[in-house]
Length: 488
Image 1 (cartoon, rainbow, N blue to C red):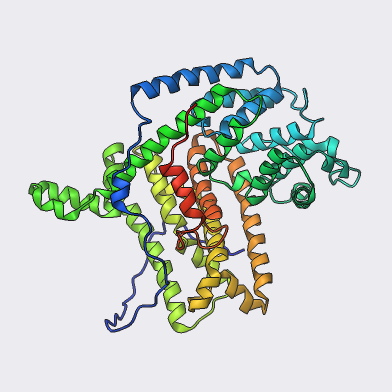
Image 2: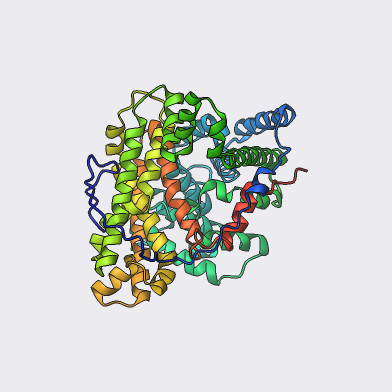
């Protein structure tokens, strides 16, 4: 993989003179027209707001909170935490979840099922590693044979095998046992015949594992599955539905507010307000204005400008390669393409938006998280290339990672795609290691940057989900932003 000797906010970027030919015909990407009607967006109305709604949600929250005290053993607590996370309400119970996991790590983990039950062992491993706890493969000792590989007998336990497959995606570099388990579970789960409800879970996991999914994108599916499952607490499901609808209402209001921006309306404002509106109208200035007002600081805009300058410089490099007919080596391409993926720009906005310390040293923080931003941005780039390269090749765009690999190694497209997918897995292993080394104070940033990679995994899973809006992306947006859940 390419050496990423860049800061995601580099100090200086030299500009170059560009000879603009006004009679030059711009190449077309043949993107379809925007399918979203802004008149429709501003007409959105959501009834899932107000004090009555919030009171009911708060009542349910207290009911669910009591479930932590009713869960008397480790397996029960693990399943409760897992359900709460999948249902999108973990942020409401951060203290309870952290206390429960701390209690598990401070006692003997392999009691009451974990360590002797594959399902609970894998679930325990996944949850602890997700939350940054140090957990080793020793948890699986009872399931390993004399060679160090997983016993073949475990593949008769479907639920255990499914959870092992999920937790294998949190493997670190060098944890070959989990990598082997991932391959074996994948193959076995695809061929085995199981009952309908469990088959849905298996299909969902094989489509995209939990660790690679944006949690919010997955929430509605998980709520519907949980509601249909016998034995699940109605309070848990109802709280998840209330929470989903309330957050959806917030997102709808944000869409309405965004669609109201109209630069012509500045003519009706006083002169001093025109200056403010100009700042709001421009994306970077708008973001800086909001952050500075909220954080009472004055150093945001230079960082945003620098991030956008680096992004544009990376795009300019790709444009030069195209005009020169130059195909970079894969390493050379990736050393620039992780920046042109837009991941560093997004990460800069995230960092500046969530910091609670108005005196935060942005350069210092970005330096500490440089590898995470690099890895997340690299996954964005590699997923993008896998999803869009066929169309880009057809219209003669500048070479992507796939074409660079093909030309450099005289390889087939199939071989190139296989190599790119292996790079994605390697990069996820690096992210897993970084996540495990983060202090609690940095986990919000780490989770958000990880979600940048997860968004790319989802959007480009079946092709160009960004440029071709009329496919899976449309249905997902409608489900998440437009269609509320029915309450019982």
